[in-house]
Amino acid sequence: MSIEDNKALVRRFYGEGVHSPALFDELLAPAYLLHFPGSPPISGIEQAKQMMVRYTTAFPDLQLTTEDLIAEGDKVAIRNTWRGTHQGVFQGLPPTGKHVTFTGTDIFRCIGGKIAEQWADLDALGLMQQIGVILS
Image (cartoon, rainbow, N blue to C red; front, side, top):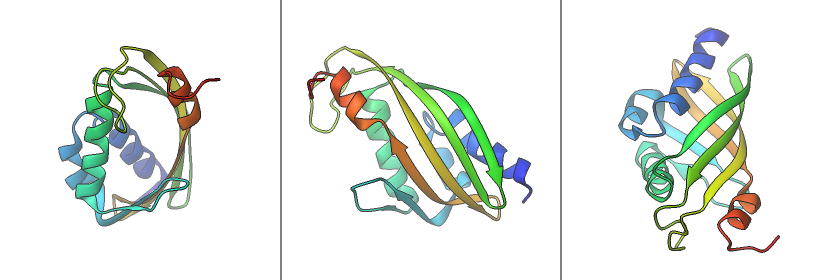
C-alpha cells in the first residue's frame, strides 16, 4: 500500500469507524493491537469495537477534527481534537451533561491495507477535569 492509501485508511478509521465500529472488521488486521499509556494493550478487533462503543455510548455526539495527518513508510501519525457531551456512563462515572473538548495523537502501523497496530495518547487528564472528576 502507498503512503496515501495508508493515510486514507486512517482517515476512514476515524471518519467512519468511530460511530460504525462494525467497519473495524474491514479496517483492522485480525491481530490488531492498541497501546494506551498505563494500560494493557487492547488486542483484536472485538476488543477494539467494545472500546469504541464505550466511548460513543458515553459521548454519543462525539466528533473529531483532524488537525494533522503525517505518514512515512508503514506509519501514519494523526492529531485530533475531539468534542462531545458526556451523556452516558464513562469509566463508571454517571453522565454529567458536560460538553468536553480534548486532544489525541495516534500513530498507526498499516500492513496490507489494514491497521495492524496503534499507539494512542489522549488528554485523559483534561477530559476528566472537564467532566468534574478531577479538579484542575
